[in-house]
Length: 201
Image (cartoon, rainbow, N blue to C red; front, side, top):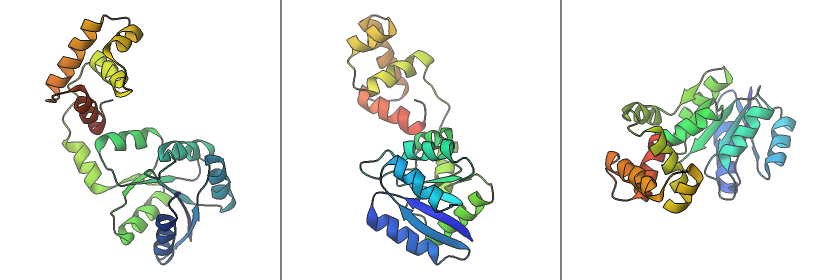
């Protein structure tokens, strides 16, 4: 029996997933919510074999919860569950040490099969996300353009970015213009969004 713990602050989602997974052969599921410390205690007490962490829970950084579980309980593989499956999200999830990435839209049987494979030691990624990631072209941005876009993503004006990078404001604007041109985006906000979705930031 694979003991699975579902981590989400959304009660309806958590209980529905537990109910659906518990009827699958060889799976037993319980839910957990609360602070990261409480979740860690729940996972430990449940002697979970796999933790399914909802990345999209309001009021919680699901990725930081997943990262904490990976670090604190390396023997318990983590499956990230998300409604967003862009290459950027996949890259962040894999960098966090997560062993599985599933879509909220996956049929229960597919999610159960993914959990079984992760419990067996495999790395499993939602198929559409994997295909979308393979379709992304190579990163056209230079290291400096990425650095400038990362700071722009924090909402910093060109002058503040220039101060932090020891550049002139004009040079920063040139890097932003080059990045927008390469990404075919009319403004820096869309350039940041496109680069994040592609996993380039």
